[in-house]
Structures are given as C-alpha cells and as structure tokens.
Image (cartoon, rainbow, N blue to C red; front, side, top):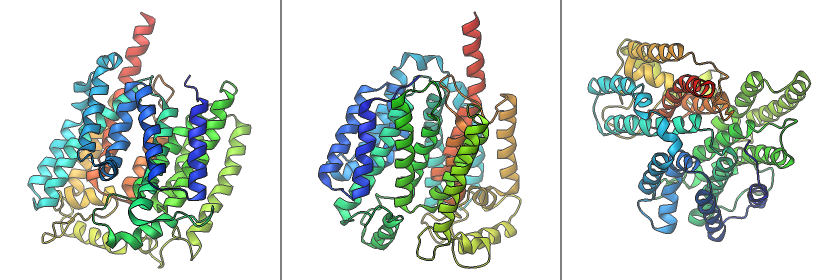
Length: 442
C-alpha cells in the first residue's frame, strides 16, 4: 500500500497556507519548482511520465516564460516517453495492441475532416486528435495498468502545479490573490478582466479547476479505513481541503459542478464504505451541495447560474447552443465535417462547449452513432465494468467522470479527446487483470 510521508504532508500544508494568505511571486514559484523537480527525481518513472504528459505539458508554457526554456513542452513529452520505455515492468504492456483500438477513431475523424471545411482550425483539430489521443492513451494505459503508480506523489505534484499557475499570474499580471479566505472565484474575475492585457494566453483558470478536480478524484482513492495509516488519513483530509479550495478560488464553474458529481459517484461504487460511513458521507455531501447551490444562486458570485429561463441561458452558453442546434438541423446525418462548427470565414478556434453537440454538428448523427457503437462494442467485448480497478486498487470512475464533465461543459476535441483515450486504457484493463491472475495461478 502506498504511504504518505511527512514531506507530503508538509508540502500540502504549505500550499494551503500560501493560498489562504495570498502569498505568491517569483521566490515561491521557484520553491515550488524545486519541490516538483525533487519529487520527480525521487519517484518511480511511471508516475513521472504520467505527470509530465498529463499535467506538466500545459504548465511547461509558463516554465518557458519564467526560465526561458522555449521547448519545455517537447522536453516533457520526450522525458515521459523515455520514462515509460525504461521501466522494465511496462515492457509487459503491449502498447501497440492497446493503441490499435484508438486507430479506428482517428480514421473516423479523418474521414469527416476530408468532408469538412479544411481550414486552419480543422487542420489543427485533426492533428491534435491524433497526437494527443495517442499520447494520452499511452499515459492512461500506464496509469491504469501499472500498480507502482504513486497516487500520493501525483496529487502533491498536481497541487504544486496549480499553485504555480496562481503564482505566475501574480508575477506577470500582479494578481494579489484572494482578498480573504472566503474570496472564492477571485482568480476568474481577475483573469477575465486582464484577458485583453495578455500577450500570450499562457494561463487558464479552467485548467487549474480541472487539475484540482483530478487531484480530488485521486484523493478519494485514499479514503480512510481501518488499515490505513495516520499519515495517510491526515493526507486524505488535507488533500480534499486543498483540491476543493483551489477549485473555489479558480472560479471554474465546470469544475465546481463536477466535484459533487464525482463524489457521489465514488460513494455509489466504493464497496469499502459501510452503511454507517455512507450515511455520514451523505450528510456531509448534502451540506456541501447546499454550500455550492448558495454560490450558484448568489447574484454576487461568479459561480451563479446565468440569467434567463432556458437551459442555454442558465449555463451561459446561449449563442453556442443555438448555433449548434441550427447546424444540426441543416445537416443532421453527416454533419458539417471536422471543424465545421466554426464559421468558414473564421479560422479561429470556436466550439459549442459540449462534446456531444460538437460531434453531432461535425460528424452528424451517423458519425456519432458509429463512434458510440464502436466504443460500446469494445467495452462489451472486454467486459468492462464501471467500478473496475487495476491491481493498484485505483478506482477509475471518479477520474473518468471529471474528464467527462469537462468535455460536456467546456473546450473541444483538441483537448477533450482524452475522454476517448481514457476509455481505450479502461478497455485494456480487463485483459490485463486476466493475465495477472493467470500468471499468479501458474
């Protein structure tokens, strides 16, 4: 069983204190960087690779700006692949076999790319689907199939990276942090106000929120039990507080709405929780939900629902959703091709902020049904179950729900393609568990 150390506890406590007091700036950024490098050099290579691909690649743009290393992202990807290759255990994972499941998805999107407008944004979209889809598939396959993944260190690294996002905003744009401990959503207000001043959009409050929800999902796997150590129990509660606090400060609505859904999914599928504990957690959950609802309907809160009577107006996406429905009406069967949601005269990135609307707009009902049918067939053929775990006792559903919620509330396939990548890794789990069981019995 993975155990938390005093170092892990201290790092999370420091992050909590710095966030709560609004202490940021270059010295703190460099200290966080030093702690991150130390952890990456001292943990297993699989955990290092997962962090570099999944989380550090976006952070690398900020490192490039601070430390003047212009190829930080490429270095991160290169080191991640070296880490995966160099771990002897991973040689038993047949990457080619698992990646082959993703190839038909790439082919489907390529067909609709050829049927689409083929402007610069659709070109970018096709490239991102292929390379991000494959890289994230490798990342998630290692995450799910390798029992040596250190989730505690991964959580600490994610929290350090989110703190660095905040700290960079202070360095570059003089953000002073939350005015008080309860000044939730302050980062988003500042971010949107300073948006026009940014030469390069290196910071994204949604990325901070999503990373924190993922950290929250990993922390749930450390739910205290009779067998867990005192340090692990302490780390669990500190990790929960830190991840929720970072989401609240970020002002990312999609992430805030994801937290209770992820938590309820965990409660429903986690069998270690007895009825008494389930009741306790449900009571806590109800309190938390009312706490969130208060923000949603508070007129002064950035988390509040939009004005209006329709769903589109309440989720702040009236134009995107109406535009999507118009496009679906025009070409319901085959859609407008990859990138077809974006007007032909506009090469900028533009999307409906919902993966299902995006799919139906661009690959039509036929393409969407082909994609869903293919994934369902793969899931059924490999007998995938929702609560399935790897040998490492990693609960899949909360992490997948966090990714799926992001895909349905923001961004487009250039980022949300990782939903399919995660499913590919999930599909490979059942065969892997059979192999492990067979080797154990032989």
